[in-house]
Length: 158
Image 1 (cartoon, helix red, strand yellow):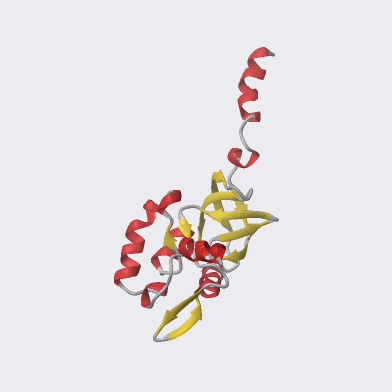
Image 2: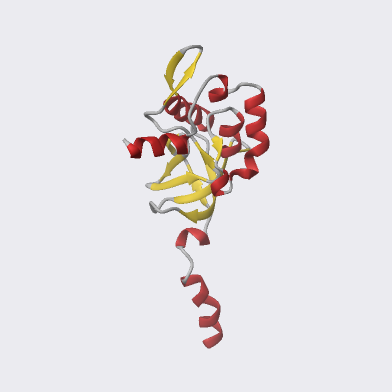
């Protein structure tokens, strides 16, 4: 009995999310956040523009945050998404690396210029995708934009 308790007790100290992978159909909240059966999932290592954030392309402003969310929604469609728990953020969201349609969702977002590698939070794994998107002027890289983390800071200072 003592051996069984010793084997199970450490599991009770880890978050429930850490003990499982999350799999299911999702709704897209924004360019870096999904909802799976009521559980918010923040995509690990990327930062997409906020919904109200504007970028410029060809001399015209556009809602790059909305564009990012639409791209993500179109990419995932109704596919089953498999997410591997990485952490829980300060807002209580699961932070996870997710795959859909045979691809790392974060990598797809960065590679297509709809999100940046969030190096402060493990995004260096997406450096190659970001360099390619920038070189090919994909998504936000086709015009002018403020990094999402800088845009949020500006909004807080107002």
